[in-house]
Image 1 (cartoon, rainbow, N blue to C red):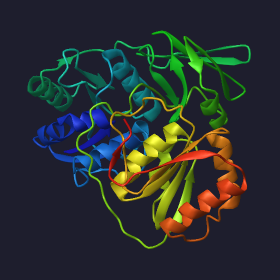
Image 2: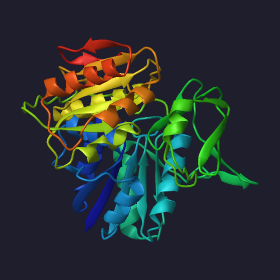
Image 3: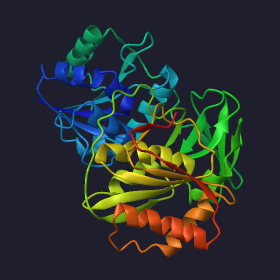
Length: 370
């Protein structure tokens, strides 16, 4: 029997349960596992599971399920912030995948409220046997979903979407970009003409809103709080190349892995505090330095993020980091190869010529942002 496993997010990997569950499933047949989500890819690298969990593609969980749809049975494992967020996640993913095949969701293993949900239950004996076996081995109850899933509605020109399981003070991310902060446990995002215009129960972050274009709240990926709550020891790579290309990242830092594929990258210029945090952490696993352009409005979206030895952070003093980044992008040839020293000097020269004031922080060892 072929068993397709979708591993979502870093927590299920860092906790050790992803590997444990995959090994348990081998009792029933051949197991093929794929990841869904970017920070989970970093967790797989840190835990040295690349040979067990396929991280070669950037896929949403529903896309990973579709890729594995030729399996006899599908497993979706997740470690949500809470029971309600985990169940909401599962319902949304299963509906988006639209696969007429049993899917066993394993949610929050190791927690008192951890559960197993059987989606598209066809009453087959093997589905029941696997679910019962996992329930016993993981000490999880088999339950029905307690969430309504995607809660979205329209009123005149505006679209409203409820965000589940939010804690006061948490950052709110839409498609990987921080767009605001929660002031309440009840948060509703509001969009009009493809642009987020309000957060009921929260406050907007203008810089993030400006980075998002044509948002469809029905399809958007929404996250809150810390992206990776319990990171294991980072698997840092030091890569020595004399010269390479420069990439610009000025929106979702989680997309950076796709930008470095099949390309000799000497460094990434990252625009924005949150983008710099996420990119620095991800790229440290690939031996790529960053030149971070920031203005000091970083949100707590990663716990103990790292940045590679030799990276430089520019704290812009007389304009927004987005404006400083735009000046750089207009003046740097991205089709040219640079040495790291050359691109660093180029950035400082451009700033000088355009009267960009900054403080510079050079990191001569592996640096922890916090």
